[in-house]
Image (cartoon, rainbow, N blue to C red; front, side):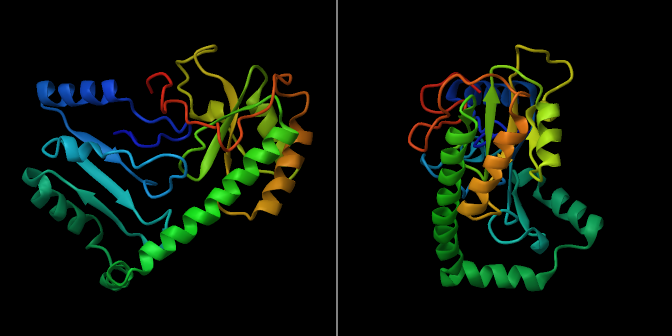
Length: 251
């Protein structure tokens, strides 16, 4: 199970070498791959990343969802499975929940056929890009010691720092009324520094630019002295990159 197009929370894109190694493993070990492409439509500064399923359709189960584009409450997603496993998976789905409600599926089908879904996606891309840019600008002003990662796609970004305690930083932010995830929440307990960096995971999709700017200002005040000392400005909209994108190391 992996998210090769946009890993959460780092924004890493699985490199070509690792994709090829993964496909070799699947062929040699008779293995199965589950590709979770949960936010593929949300990309700002890069072209679409080819799906693993297109490269190895007999081994890859491709998952998608409308939860990030329409509403989580629809409970509609999809699975593109290898032909040999489709019948068993359909039966397992039927036994698990008697199948997805037909009416929401008909509504989504109408949105797709009419072009309304594509128009909605264009609107979302414009709005979320503006919110992403507002967050990066505010981070450069109020958290100049941070480095931005994963800003080319998705609905969140990660800010890392040269030192500090991200658990304490997240707690201080919460006291100030700002909810963030410490990056260490997403790290295996078997991995110790400096194999990972201290940092925060920040979502920007739910709030307009003005609220984002205010929230980042509160965040900067709250974590001052908890995270590492300044070391230059955070990456701006033109330079912010996911950890493994366009010339960076493998993810």
